[in-house]
Length: 190
Image 1: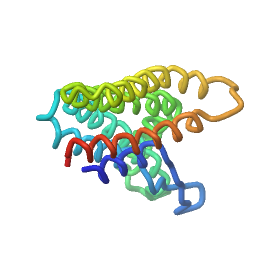
Image 2: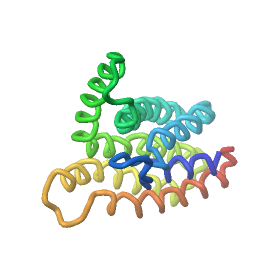
Image 3: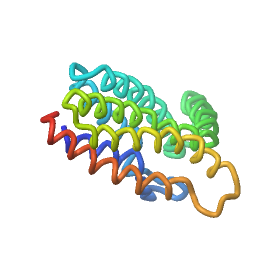
C-alpha cells in the first residue's frame, strides 16, 4: 500500500510529456493513474477511518475527470479527411472537452489536493487514537498547507506570477509522501 500511495502521489503531481506524433504529446505520468492508485489505497483502508473512504471517493471523481482530459489530448490521433463521419463527431466532442479541460486545468489540478486533505485527516485520526500528538500535529500542518495551497495554486496559475504553480506543489507533496510512508509503516497500514 505504501508504494501504491507514493506512486499515486508521484503521478498526480509530476508530468512528463513524450511526443508521439507531430503536435501530439502523451503524458507518460497521467494524473488519472495517480488518482486511481489513491482511490485503491483509500478503498482498501476505508475500514480504518471514514476519511480514507472520502479520499477514495474524491480520487475516483478526479480520476474520471483527468481520464477524459487525457483522452481528449489524443484527439489528434483520430483519422482525418475520411468519409467516416463518426470520427469527425468524436473529434468535435473531444475538441470541446479538450478546450474545457485545458482552460480549467489549474482548477482540476488544485482540486487534486482534496484527496490529500482527506488523507491528512485519516492519518491524523489514526495518530490521535494512538495519542501520538507530534504525528497528529504534523498531519494538521499538512492539512492546512493543502487547504491554503488550493486557492494559492489557482491564483498563481491564473495570474502573471513569475513561477508556475506546480513549483509550489511538488516539494510539499514530496515531503507529504515521505510522511505518509512513515505513518503507514508505523501503523501497519498495508
